[in-house]
Length: 309
Ligand code: AMP
Image 1 (cartoon, protein in one colour):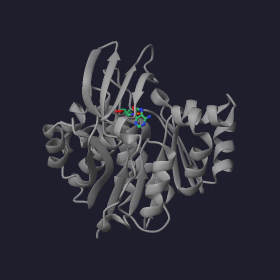
Image 2 (image 1 turned 180 degrees about the vertical axis):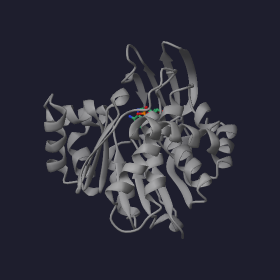
Image 3 (image 1 turned 135 degrees about the vertical axis):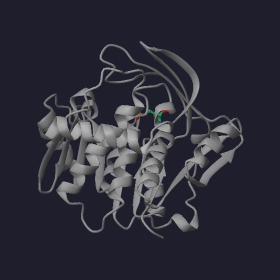
């Protein structure tokens, strides 16, 4: 198989409130956003396939399945079982940098035992999107990637499954984490000290720290990369920004071979930053689904002008 990205994560119905309004039972989930972003980049670059491993309940709408399929996502690893699809309720306030979680109903994810389809046992990239770390580890065991393993998480798992999370982080090459989570894991308010502490502790080759409106900081064996956020004031709903960012990163890094070069990581981080800035602009997956190659390239050019001139 050519370059391929396997994503394990949640498929969800989200209820979200932000200063711009609210939505109920909107299609979301870490694998949904990550998958849509990776599939978009794969499509516009004539890249390889993107597959999802996850589970939904029998309440998952046919139209949502079709929507995912139409973006050319491979859903052969998506199980449908009796019960309710994962549900998350959250809200955003102030600078909207971080979601406040009100409810998490794991539902069908509670007893989920991932089964990776036979043709997805050796992808180029295995990306564990936000999910219980034991499920992430299980998929990593079933699908060791030929190039890079990646993992994203959230504060919930640091609070209730810290040991399992650290053990999953130790298994991957690239960890994506946000600034609040780094501080929480290191128990240190100084971001740089906390970042180096976490890198030491988990021993990952690459560490990507998302700082919301302040951009991203990444540790590469050849040095530090620091990139600002795309400056936008049109913030409707940040849900899925992190997953969009990570899905884009996965798609970009699936393109090369051998160890990830520093310039390659920087280029992927720039594309990830720009793609995530679209997800902010509407509730749910709408702006990601409406994204075109022209719109993306135009904003990427604008971003390059901002950061390089
Ligand atoms: P983010 O990119 O961090 O904004 O991710 C938001 C998505 O994560 C939402 O669509 C939620 O459905 C999903 N989500 C929230 N909590 C969890 C959780 N505990 N496990 C897996 N996915 C979650």
